[in-house]
Image 1: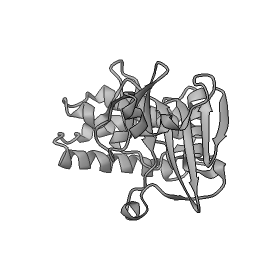
Image 2: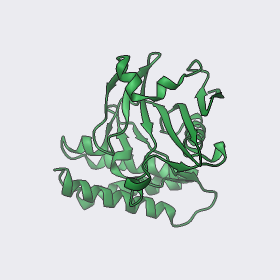
Image 3: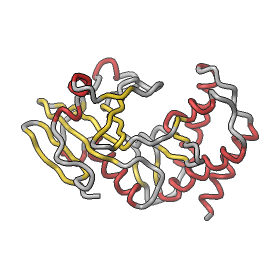
Length: 241
């Protein structure tokens, strides 16, 4: 991976020069991509802002940064301007590049853009698209066996042992492939911690709440306690390895 930066007026672009030529602004604009016939769909669930495309033969997903929570409707996609390296896409890109380079199950970052406008910035990140389905999408086809839940827990435990505190470890941010590989996505606001604490338990509690929510809202059968126990067993095993 070869991180490089370029500036085009008020726009700053970070990209992997090993895999992409210097990107232009159109690569980050869904309307321009649609006009050029380069969009290949949109993922279900979430906030509905991401889109799929092909970038030089690499399947990719483009995700704009948008606020959630109480301030989402008010501030939308606007963030307070500051140092470029402190912006959300730069932090996420660098974190993904580091973890992916170390062999952890996270998507490879391809490019990111920050657009400065007065006291604010807006931004997008482009990631390699994984051939996988989200955990809720998988559960709609039927329950997972305990061994699969143990694998999910083991993946999370590996990342926790590395020090990754995922700020939003919900079911939609866990991907499962047909060959049994588990990936964790959406590391916006995630951080690496040097010391242990209660944050791994908070991550797991967030995931449990998310699983309960999709059982209520998404026509998915509740996850049996024995399966949640298998998840926690896999998580604990990874921490102890």
